[in-house]
Amino acid sequence: MSFHRDQDTICAVSTPPGRGGISVIRVSGKLSWQTTRKFIPSFPERAQSHKAYFGVFRENSQTIDEVVVTFFEKGRSFTGEETCEISCHGSPIVVREILRCFTGAGLRLADKGEFTYRAFMNNRIDLVQAESIVSMIESQSLAAAKQAARQLQGGLSQIIEKIENDLTWCLAHIEAGIDFVTENLDYVSNQELIDKLSLIAAEVDKLASTFKSGRLIREGVKVALIGAPNVGKSSLLNSLLGEERSIVTDIAGTTRDVIEDSFSYEGLSIKVLDTAGVRNSTDHVESLGIERTLRASKEADLCLVVFDPTQLETWLEPRMLQAIKSRIKDCMIVINKSDRLGAEASDLLMSLQLSLRSSKIFTDQELAELFNRQKIEFVSALDKRTAEGLKAAIYRHLVEAGFEDNSLVSHSRQFELLHSSRKQIEVANELLKSDLGAEFVALELKESLISLQQILGKSFDDQIMDRVFKEFCIGK
Image (cartoon, rainbow, N blue to C red; front, side, top):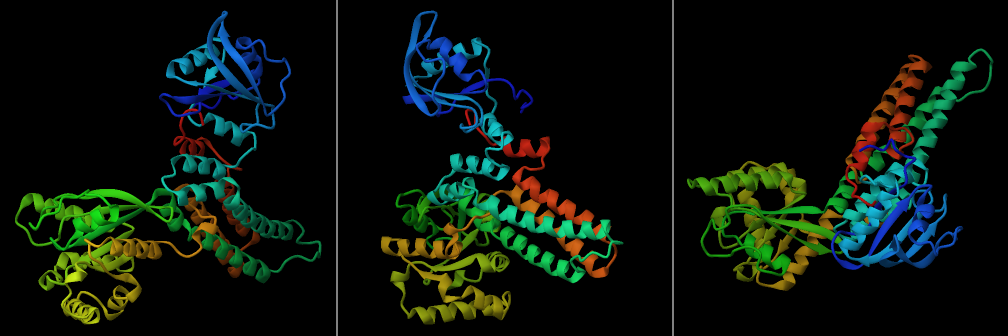
């Protein structure tokens, strides 16, 4: 990106490419209204901000289109600059011609994210809000859109600014103690600073701990169906999706590769992966599919371990048990074909638990975690009612109550900088406890503050800007 040409007046189409009822072309910079009037001379020389004007866009007396132009004065637009938004008919040819006229008059086509970049540089938004705009545009679910809206409104920024203010208070008192050490002035004791920094560290930890939930909401949740061949994983996928997405046969090993598709539940995007059944196999292609299954189980946010109550001999496949053990907290047991149960559910679970205990792979604590009754579902892939119950169970397991009311960390950049800030606070606190010198404590707290300020964009460099704005599209 080349954002060194900040004084240029820029233009770009801000609506999606292709044909539509209306396209919107955005023009931002000090020559916005002046240049627009060249092609629509009927417009007044001094326009009113936030007022829409109808006119005919012409070049050399040749009509290109009838348009509506909304004018925003400097300081009251998204970018903070004088801005015009031209609504024209949604023909790619019309859009191309209007942009050609503007560039011919000296305007420059905007780079990716340049309008948002200018809003950031003009203090209309901070860097967290800039990232939320990308998240809003790319949101695949209602929950993701709501989270992005909360961040755009400044919810997360306000929490980080509070932490920044508390940390600045500590740094100010430490530096005052350094500067006026001979003045016999009252200053905050080391113990007070230690206590204060401990509280700040806890706030940072609490905020950083929301990253997993924030990422799941923004990117969607990945759920892997794992189990032995022919336990009904493909049928279960089709039932969850409400369509025939995966091939279902009575032949074990039909699924050779990972098949995935998504559904939405309570506004959350959930991607389900149907995997090859895990068993000992001499078939090279099937073995490759099993390796992909094991890899998918490691990468998924939640594993649904599917068992068939009529195939007790498949329960003890060692590689599947090891996969379960490695993800014990992120596994749910799904007893499929429950309509064929010949025994009480409690007896079946006891039999399954005894079988797994006999494998000597799991500790008693791990078995207790795995057989938590809240994490066990009895379903029938042929019964749509049980599929809805399974969706609700997945949702309950993945999302903590009340997440939609919280401001969550959702970008890895934010999480990494919070982690860095937290580490420097910890070092500063240890230095205070050891009484090794206020100058060293102040140095660590300054570095911690810089990390927090980089999250908001109060302190930034080209590398930070490239990381944030490379995700943007033209016109935003």
